Length: 143
Image 1 (cartoon, one colour):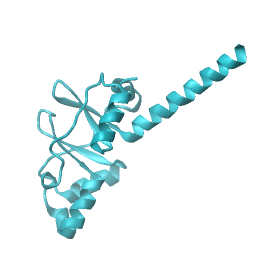
Image 2: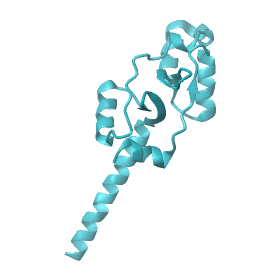
Image 3: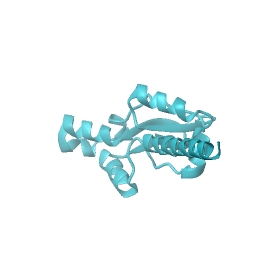
């Protein structure tokens, strides 16, 4: 299965923010949308960075509550790993595991077209294992 298949099932909506918005704005977006990361984009929808719940916790731990009034750009991850829609789930799992992150923006022709999370990948993998087990049970029952 590919990233395209995941996006077709879950949707392509991505909550985006501007780099000049505050950390408090980002936290509000995460809470209101019940998500774990927001993507920072420019006017052309090119990925500039990503900010996760972990980034917010680190910022507050390092700077206290005053961090909430600072721009997101001060805390975002700017060297963002992205994938394309043709990436396989196994490739995405490997990238996420090696990079130790939970969200991977999906780009096409340099523009943001989706976001996959570790939860999306695990859900797909569990469904695949269940399908394989059912196929084995069916094979054994008919053999």
